[in-house]
Image 1 (cartoon, rainbow over the protein chains, first blue to last red):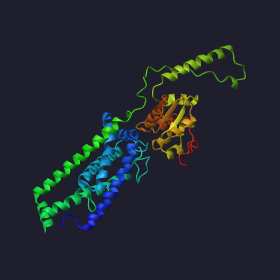
Image 2 (image 1 turned 180 degrees about the horizontal axis):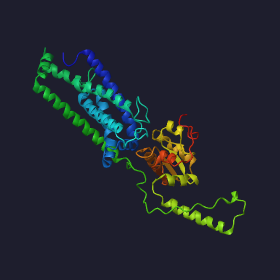
Image 3 (image 1 turned 180 degrees about the vertical axis):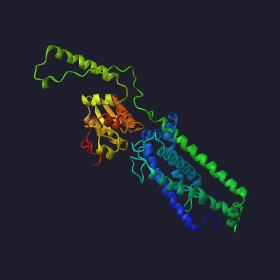
Image 4 (image 1 turned 90 degrees about the horizontal axis):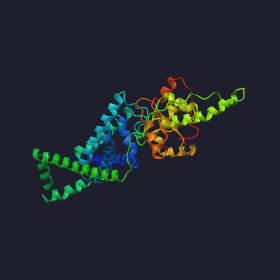
Length: 162
Length: 218
């Protein structure tokens, strides 16, 4: 057999689809309103002002592309790697915002960042939520897309030919 | 079995290195695709702004006029000729002062606008903080309700002056709401950068309870 055991592959499939759903939803909100998302980024006072509009477009579209790749199971490890990198950046940004004095987490500077957490305030709940997502995307990065993926389909004929 | 042969081969260090390289290359390709789509989206989108009042040319601020004499209706003596003449002067001086106001104002200016009923006030803080205390008469429009901001236009006349405030200091919510109002074509938007803490510190009147007019909860 190749890759992880069947139970892991089944879990990877579920994790993959869950991640894709979450990121597709998050991206849809941001793409529908780039101005609000640009302001959310600006609120963190981390990204230079000139780069804020670029980030406001690239981040949600990277989420869409990776979500699509995860649903299809095409280049699943690569897509999960990008999402892991973005989640690490989000976690870093939120933690630094919570620790600094010049950013007020209570004033709704962060737009609709809530998923499981209250949207008007940012807090450690958002950090926990992103760590949970990071665990999932790291698993897919390490073990691959699991069952029902184009990656597995592409591997099979190659294995047959060998 | 052929499959186990492939698996054995993939366990060699060289093959594993190759695998990591493939994953990284594909990640770069996916990211490149995202950048292309994002670029196309950006190209077709109006300018993204992170600061309100950018379009406004700000000149020197005119000194605010002295307060007019007490309303003649409240005084037992009938208005004199001089008092009647001072009214148009006051209105002109007031208009000049209002036109010269910058986008970002402080508590004193905000209070003058509020006290003389010269502007609508918008509280950009979360609903629970608004309910705990706000500037009397202010509407509650947190950024998360930003899409509903056009409902506010029902309560406005053209050219109405608006003051947006939030928590003061680092709070950006008022800026986002101000940008939205400017996008809707309202150019006379001010941000009270001292926010609600500045208002209470100055000892001005406050009110509490939910926003009865906009009723976001319904």
